Image (tube, rainbow, N blue to C red; front, side, top):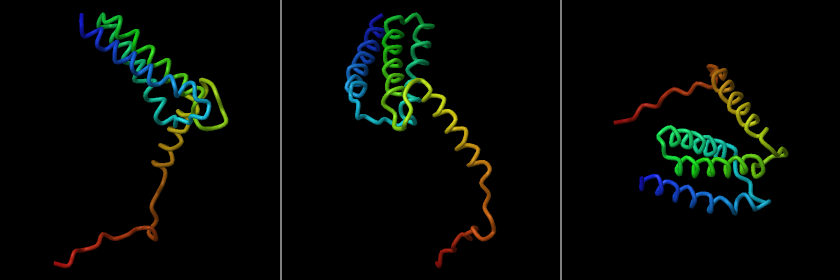
Length: 117
């Protein structure tokens, strides 16, 4: 199927474009960008595989691996390795908890202004 080869070509280009980031020891890619990209690549790989598009699945898996290397070794912070995924997940949970538990006091309430027509 020609579409399979087109998706593979797109994945190969992504891998080529991501390679300099993996090689650059000074690169700092936020986990908020790299973890979702890694996850999407893995999901695409699984999806393509179930559709019988083996070349596309292989290419998307390669993209997911490149993003996982970026997650592991090019994220800001003192830690390296796959544990960064767990650090990112804990951060999301903490942010969600803080958002849910924040309350507004009466002193913080700002009444909506009325327009003078």
